[in-house]
Structures are given as structure tokens and as C-alpha cells.
Length: 105
Image (cartoon, rainbow, N blue to C red; front, side, top):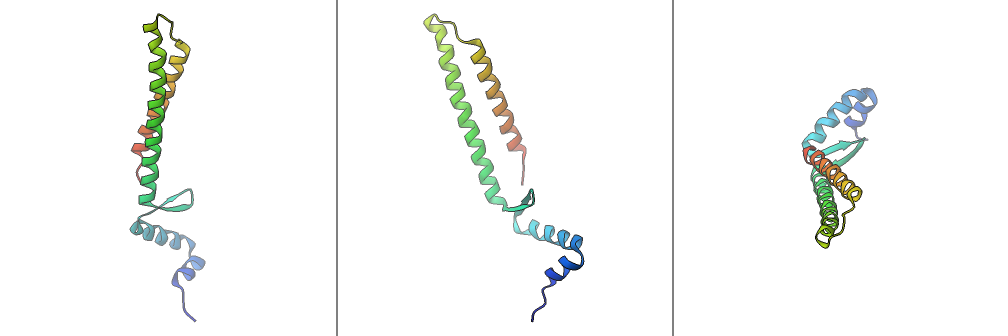
């Protein structure tokens, strides 16, 4: 039979086990998010993918905004409510990007 020190520590002193486990995780490039553990590099890749998706969404909204503004050159009235709505969405997405970029693992 073999002795498992981690098992014994977890059973006898769960707090000490949690501290030691957190220290070990820090050295292994894992991050804990809501009780689940992920590789740090994978989290960074996911974050970058989310930022790219949000930027693509902004590009699409800006294209829609430009199409609406082109109505002025055709002597039509652009839909101001639509333009305001698009602008609000773009601002919200930019805020999300700023928040994501600030997040570090």
C-alpha cells in the first residue's frame, strides 16, 4: 500500500490542502474560474477569440450605419432611431472589448 499525502492533507486539513493546491496551480499555469480549472494559454486564446468576434460585430454594425448614412446622398432621410440604436450597440461592444482586454489570467 502507498501513502497519498495529498489525500491525507485534504481529509485532515482541507484549508491547508486548498492553499497548497492553489500554490501548485499557480506554478502549473492553470487558472480557476468559478470552481473549474483551465490552462492559462487556453483562456488567453478564448479571450482573443471573443475580442475578434466583438470587433467583427462592430464592423458589421458600422457597415450598416454607413449604408443608412448613404441615404443622405440619395436625398433620403436616414432613420435617426436606427442610427442611434446602432451607435449604442457599437459603444456597448467597445465597452465589452475594453473590459476583456483589461482582464488578465
